[in-house]
Image (cartoon, rainbow, N blue to C red):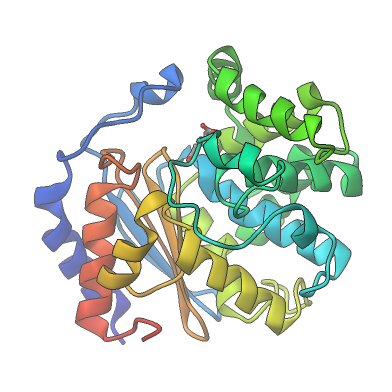
Length: 307
Ligand code: GLU
């Protein structure tokens, strides 16, 4: 496969979509990013990386971090289907927006899945218990796995989110009232905001997500997750990773994927490669418009969906 040629064709296809959609502004610091940006990268399972456009420009990973926090919790607790985290968070699509409160009361403070905000807060809470410093342990992992020692938090984004974080604080307090948090709410939401504020490029994210394509093996060949655990994360990405549009995304793209409101999307082709695409204009569900178009075109051109 000539990845470079495929990416160039994909980028040309996605270009007309780049200014469609809206840059997220509910976290004011995210609004500073130019809507014109577009980048895409592929990292194959051997670590070769290819990219086009703004593929080396860092952006705010936001909810893409939820994939890594889940992986780190599963890795640290050798979680299988009976692992404790799955007693505290489900694995069904929610059918509601990512920051919705409505299901939580009816479902006794157990979030539907680890990729809506409530579920991600539970996962970060668990990572905090396991590591003593959830956000820093994630940053270190991402530096190692991406091979980029310069990865950092963006304090202005973390601060901006904290200033406008009433909804996430409400979710966390509500779950605490059901006994579904182990750590104090202020510490959980602080670590969650920090992890979301990490800045990474398409290159960094495609390389760092390689363990999902390598059935749980890290870049250095050591094992992070059992193959069945990597399979489970990919499965939850497919069913819950692109907000309330995971069905549409599976229909169009057919890959496990996780998006973030910074405009990034990572996608996994198990056994082959990991992709990351970035363009900040979001559709009404919160997914990058040009990013979804690019991944759609990539799987159409290559025939490499999981289906
Ligand atoms: N930090 C964002 C929030 O919790 C993440 C949202 C997202 O990317 O989905 O609102």
